[in-house]
Length: 223
Image (tube, rainbow, N blue to C red; front, side):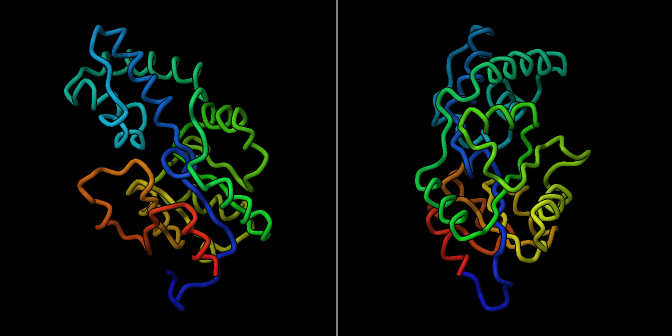
């Protein structure tokens, strides 16, 4: 729960993959498309889920190691992204209880937005396919600015577009870069424990203001 030292929350910003949306099944399918092309065994969701927040490069390094050549990584990444773009919303959806959370924010007049490192050419088609593209007060992609998280500038731009001071914004994310970016932007930050976290509990050391085990718990921070 927030303490009395926090200003009231007037805007909620979300990371996308692993916080607002469960995109792991579609990203795993893209990884497995690369593995098929390379004649390798599929990965299971349990094997790859914790790497999803690290994007295509993180997932390819999980599958092929960090010593692959730049040419091999680029070739595999092109296969990955081509497949993902063509199959971007086959299984992706809002996390459980997130629809009710968003409806509560909207009915209470609290704007919400998205700040992700996913590039715009993937972010907007995904949100459109899920009929979410008109609801956020702002959508900041990984290439909206020359810098991306953990740099705070994307979050500061989101606050500006929402018309809310950063100190009265809450940022929720499932990666350390989310918490670092939010902290450096002067926002309150929460860890989404339902997201793509490692099982080793590294997130307990992140400089967040709190941690949530379920999306519905977010609503307590608004009071």
